[in-house]
Length: 254
Image 1: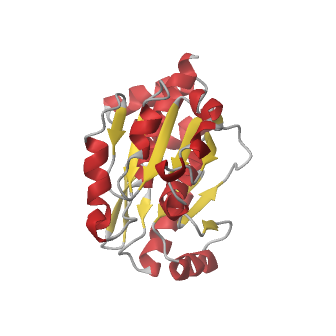
Image 2 (image 1 turned 120 degrees about the vertical axis):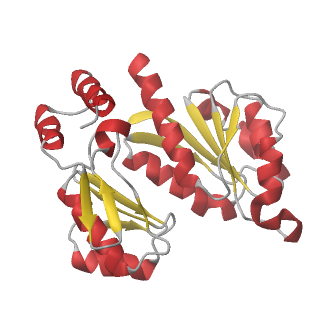
């Protein structure tokens, strides 16, 4: 194991994030696992980054997703795959027991300890109902990563008064993910109302001149609100990873 990964592992053990048995299991694990001739799994990633490698399901065959999922499940308590089509999820579930599939987020996952305590502090906000699938990718990812998530959906600028009643929820969050398509204006509004970091997710929702999310992406990058960072179009997963790290760092300091 690399020195940096070992140091991070020891810090996580000292802080109580992992148990002694989990630490021993990680130390006994080979760093790379080959699956067929198509995948080399990074088994040291939990020690370095705090969470196992995540499967990107889009573009993989059902057999490939199943084989990768099985290997990761053998080596850790939590496994997840994003962008999994329903038919692929059904196939993998028929091959491997104890998997859950969330239809809105298209996330297939296994959680050996689903009742564990989750850290509050993340809110996910959408401009419209059409943005919910991307928002759910963010929300479910954050929950699997050990966070408690507050959802505030369909509060876009076309009816801004809908947002105001949710301000107490947003103001108590450690980080807020704002998901919006069309012109992407909601993130600037939220950014002017709260003090915590905001992660903006442009979506491909909108009519022709939205250019499949490009208009929202550019608007968010040009936001006049401070404290806003932007991920790629429809990248709810990426936003959740950043939010989770912010939340756990903040939670450890409080």
